[in-house]
Length: 457
Image (tube, rainbow, N blue to C red):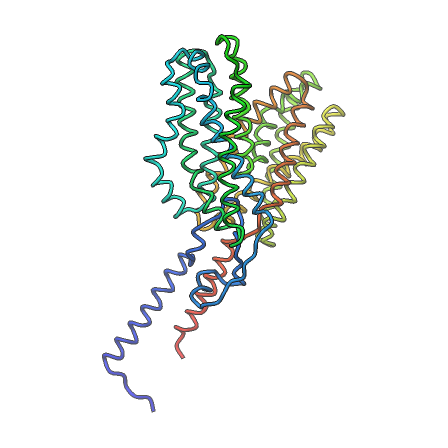
């Protein structure tokens, strides 16, 4: 026979149900995120541990050991880091080793040239603590992206106004200051990179290689700058200085491409901008047709975007689909390039196929990035992708436009094809670590478990 509950028991029962209900509502809105999820690696993918179906924090709490797995691409990641550390260190010493030449070139005292080196040290002091906090809270990937971005940006700023006067020096100092900010992000990475991606027997070697890249950059600065920039009159060495800055900027840009990939979208921007010049090069007075071809690219891209989105929702094959569409985009660009001079109907077909793949890649890139960078907000990942896409679009448009003007559309399109091929190859090395999907699955399981506990008998 059921007994009557006392008022205290009733209050306790109600309180427990209220607590259970409250916890359910919170978890429904906010998925559980383990401590490890808050630290994302330098290149999308999970570093050296696998969780065997459960998150690492839960495994640690249950005293279950997680298996260690070392990925072969860890050496590629270390090489990428060492390379842009090299580029940053090279820019630090490229002026100091020929300070007399640059002092005469810019018509400034020697101490002014010394500041191009000392700005690295000045920037480090106030920024090291914020950057260290960012490394601890946001992880290697954010630090790597920002470091390579500032390194690339600073190099291009210096190239933007190479003049043998004090105005040119002021621009150089601004660019060097941006590179100095990049150095703060770079110098603290070797130990963290080695500890996350390498085994116990490799961690010291990996850290040494990371530091080696920086020292090699200094060594190359000592060697290359005196060879490239001779001690002559400012007007005579202007071209030499431009080549020095151009080489540094180009190398830094390439490394930035290796860290954050948005080549596909940048190619789309460039092709769209220069489409009219490509068409009228082969078909004079066909500006209207160029507009219709552009419309075809966009309309087919809209179809491709919808189909790719539906496919992702159905299959969740993010990396496979992204790689497949990337390769199709490269193939489509090749066909478009070598059929431009056949006929206008042929261009409509190849341009439509190119638009289907190239624009269809847009939602794939956003969704794949959101999966890889979770628990970072989707707005952050998409914002970075869009920013890098704009940068690539500017660079590709300028270079491709120059090639079209000086040579022909074929040379300009081959330039785009080469970067699409590079992007396809690099996509292979991205690990398909669907963090957001795992978090959603864990949240659903937790919700079902709590509902089962709270369900009255």
